[in-house]
Image (tube, rainbow, N blue to C red):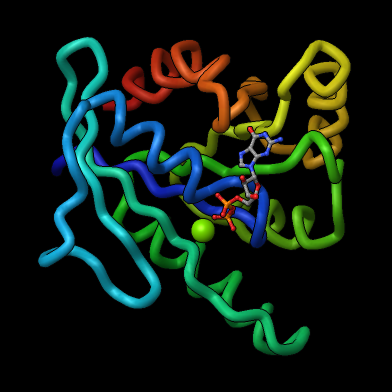
Amino acid sequence: MSNIVAIVGRPNVGKSTLFNRLIEQRKSIMDNQSGVTRDRVYGQAEWIGKFFTVIDTGGYVVGSEDVFEGAIREQVEIAIEESSVVLFVVDCITGLTDLDKDFANVLRRGSKPVIIVANKADNIEKEYMASEFYQLGLEGDIFPISAQSGSGSGDLLDEVVKHF
Ligand code: GDP
Ligand code: MG
């Protein structure tokens, strides 16, 4: 099976920003022709000689609670079916939300390893906020990053490639 990393999480946590950063580190350009669907974007990435595919599972319009429930299920189903490891992105500026807990509950029941990515840890104060996400009750470490600046992404990628 090929190495596939799915990025999931509620809207606005920085999934697409992280996706673009992971792709950028490969220094390749996203293919606009193939692999782009309404709900999922695929890109190729590389870290210390290991090549992998990244899926950005954004693209949902949140219309109602019911719609969002469906969106969560669909994202997580995609992630579990297609990926080797799931990056569950949360937001240190907003902090823990009920929607984060919904995602965690579904991911916990899945069979794929989950890495919690505490994004928007732009400075030390925000980085401290990341420990709040241990309340999600998922196994493994939490990786504080700033997808915007790139800080923390090296440590995250070191962890990601352990799963290949
Ligand atoms: P998505 O909906 O999860 O794909 O989130 P986006 O990648 O579209 O980002 C949502 C917003 O968060 C945008 O305004 C980004 O510029 C912002 N954002 C993403 N990463 C960071 C970060 O590391 N720090 C801060 N402060 N903002 C970020
Ligand atoms: Mg997005």
